[in-house]
Length: 296
Length: 324
Image (tube, rainbow over all chains, first blue to last red; front, side):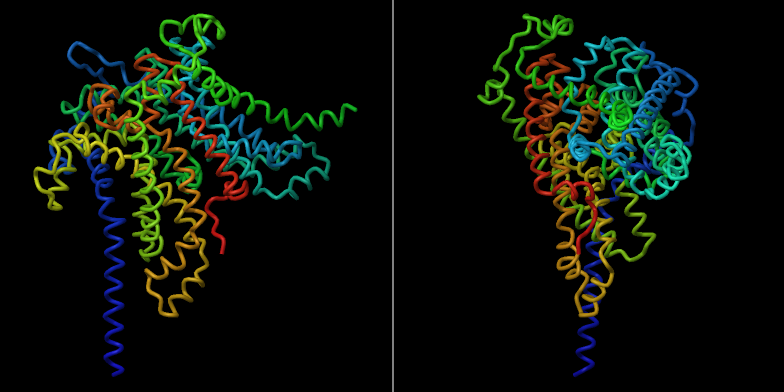
């Protein structure tokens, strides 16, 4: 009697265990296979002339990476050299990161440490902006860019895009930096003030070193979001020599699809290098920020 | 009293650069979108408008809204349907599927390393720059080179179910649109839910297990009820961002077809925000396109006010805390 009960319970436990594994497989593992295949493909395709079964490399070659040392041609058409385009992308990303960090560390500090009328209202306003999907404003921003005389001006258009992109990122960055300031105990700053530091000095020698990790995270994050920016450049930049990498890749996909998968894969991988580096270095902090990102 | 004055001024001095940037990137375009929505701005009076915002070459009119609401633009109703389908289906991936996914990864899988591998895998689509993600999909769905059809064949799908083109054949293209955005969206829910699951006191779960509850009962009776606020938060947040997200559709259909994003229309994946984009930058009907955007702006503002009411300010700031 007892033994049958135990055995029954054991079978039930086993069945439950199997059900749990089935759920994990069906929900988390099998749907993840396409993701593994895609990343497997892009890596092995970029180094091989042909791939077997989609992801197994064969005929290893660096021919796919030829865009690094020679211009890419398609019939009569010659594409702009990759290095100036990379520099444009770098310029955009650095500009966005610099501007965002500069502006939002000031405002984040004020919101965290200073008491003024309308502080709560200001924070609600920032949260609301953060939630509001900015891509809707693309048309009006196009008009503003024209009004400022920055449209179709090559390099200056990129500057305009930096201003816009930084402006769009600033509410979120302010919010994150405010969070980092909040986590530094007041007493520390207070003690410095009591000891006769000026507010500026207290900020520079006590607060700033403590908040540097936060500033680092925000600058990496805004660098990456500038690096991946597609729509603004795609929409506002008309001249090919001022394209950034994602826009160039977009146009290349249209031309080289079915013809040269290898080069497209290599190009994609080349473009992803900064993202890969930064993510493997500082994923923990970045993930926290990514939760706040408005994406898909 | 200059001292008191400067004390009052100081915070605003710190905030000034931010306010300036926000005015440029948010406030001015928001106001301008409202204004443009009521004009007939298009390519032939655009230059005059740039020189003078109040030129009489640009007329104030309600025509744009008449076109939208009285179906004078025959394509609006289809765009509307596609948008509703898109938002509802991607949203259910983001909120519901992601919930099961995170319970599976964060609770069912006890092995730390396996759990971490799965979490990183599901995060990859979000981390990857959009155009690379698009390129990988364009390859994956290609009937000749890609593996999607092969994978489905392997799972036993009959040959005549598999389309010759995932991009252009209609129900397939719409499924594809949901998949592409769903993989990115699922990770958002996953991050929020996983953090919330990890913050549930283990005692609560252990007590239930000791009392003889199964893993499923724990998931249904303890974890899911505790995730009420995170679920609401993910749904609210994603509704807002889905209403306006068309970047992946533009990239995959625009680059993948080699013919530009106009192809989205015949593929049945032209969502409202992309339609507005196309009206402005392919047909140069800036006024009409702004009116289309304005509708999204209004919906967005209403939703944000609603969210402030539901969540309260405090909860919006701390989305992943669980209240026990």
